[in-house]
Length: 181
Image 1 (tube, rainbow, N blue to C red):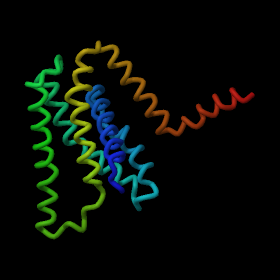
Image 2: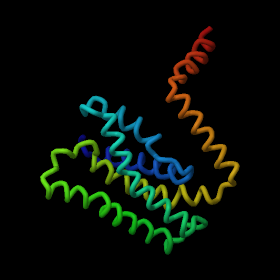
Image 3: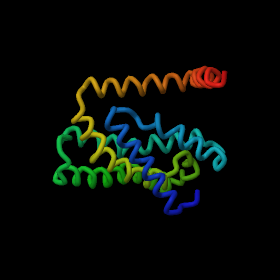
Image 4: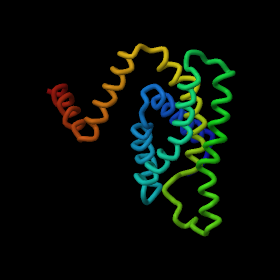
């Protein structure tokens, strides 16, 4: 992948969106990331689906850590005394949690088995995701009423189910045929 300023910005925004969605609804951001990354990498990699899944899973480490800490220490306000230490701690712990096994694999000569995670993408998306979790998603989730969160989550589950079952083509066909006739 060619790393331009535009690419970094788009991947960072994708991470931001994934972080907000993840912390707002308590979902794994793979629902958002895997389809986008898989389609984006379709022509660039031999196994775009595996690479997208591995990358999304690696991104879950910093997002889950930031989200759990943000919910634990308070999501009511965007106080830098709470948010900044959580963000910094999350970056450090994610580097340790994800980096040490990679170093160990290289030290033991197992680096040839590594390959289904795009680590540069994880690094860029993680920054956006941590910002999305700590300053946007978790505080917004705390501010919204429970019934609103349940409704948003329910709509997301229905959309995901429809897409996974392949019914979206049928539904789109109903609207396009109806509009043309």
